[in-house]
Amino acid sequence: MIPGAGDAGTLLTCLFASKGFRQSADRSALRRNRQTVQSLASRGLGYSRPPLRKRQKRPVDPDTVGGQAKPRLEYGSDAPSSQLQQPLRDEDPEIWRVYDAIRNTPGAVALLGEVIRDTLDQIYDGQWTGRWDYRQLNKTEKTHVGTLIQINVQKALGLVDGERLDYKIAGVEVDCKWSMSMGGWEIPQEMYCNWGPQIALVIWGNDYTSRWAAGLVRTEESYLRPVGKQRDKKRRLNEAGLSRIIWLQPGGDLVPNTLLRLSAEQRARILGSQSGQACVNSLFYEVQGQLVDRATVLTAAMQADSLKRVRDARKHLRAYGIVIFGHYAPHPDLATRLGLPRPELGSFVSARLVPADVNWPDAKIEIQGGHWRLAEEGDPVATAPELPEQGREKQLPVIAVP
Image (cartoon, rainbow, N blue to C red; front, side, top):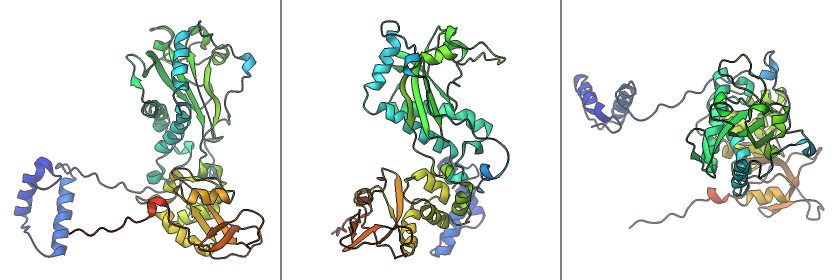
């Protein structure tokens, strides 16, 4: 039976026999036979290996054409603490039990911000679509963001399924609600009428201001706006309802969307090439001194082996004096000593270096026996040093097998 073909092995064998296929020592003939197997099997004959995704044409930059405006620029909850009317602990012990369970879990609140960033990158799918902007999504994809947030929050925090709502936290049913606009959470009828007031984990994020927020609220009917014309009778929180939110994070920094923060002219210079390698080279040439995350690299390269393009970019940019620090030792320490942002897991930072005098008073690092500093305007271009290998890039010793 042909590996991976499942029950189609016998059928493929018959097809081979009828077409005169035979075993051959000739490599080209074997390759042609293998390609025929994959072609036939991928048409529904049980071949289990998925086809490679085709790279799409890079989308149009929304800032260069008229059309959909950016969502409103918001930065988090702007209500002063003196105006908040959060329930007391003895007034609603369940919601405070959920609050304490999340707050007392180390790193749980920070994970919510990471989930937002990862989910937006997931829906952009930049490696295959080239998208980086929420406005480039279609209507169905925008609707799907909330579902992905709910799923990814559950995975990140290790929450169990609820019986009626999304989760059960500290024994209490909790539903997850997402919105790109502060206060825009849609509360369904079963959360304020059918089952009585329920607890909602409300999450908000804005990719254009790189901000996010999350809190807990009891969906009492008196804290909801009147029913609109929607058939599903979903309602939003009114001003009193917004003041009842117990904030886990009233406003935190979201990992920035690098391409979204650039000007349309810069993006055109970075993404204008047909070569994925050239786009990655331009990315680290244009964006120096800032952290560049993995999703940005994937979007620029639009290739299956996008991260390999970073390693090659180090070689190509040395002639321009530019180095690219990664997230494995000793690169983060070298970047920090130069005053650059410290690359964390999955991020990079590039900078132009020039030789430094031994008595240079400001930050400098030693590489290959020489001293290097950040280039200043007017410094002549010098070929950059070759950075030391990172911990994960070092080759393991070859062990002879007897």
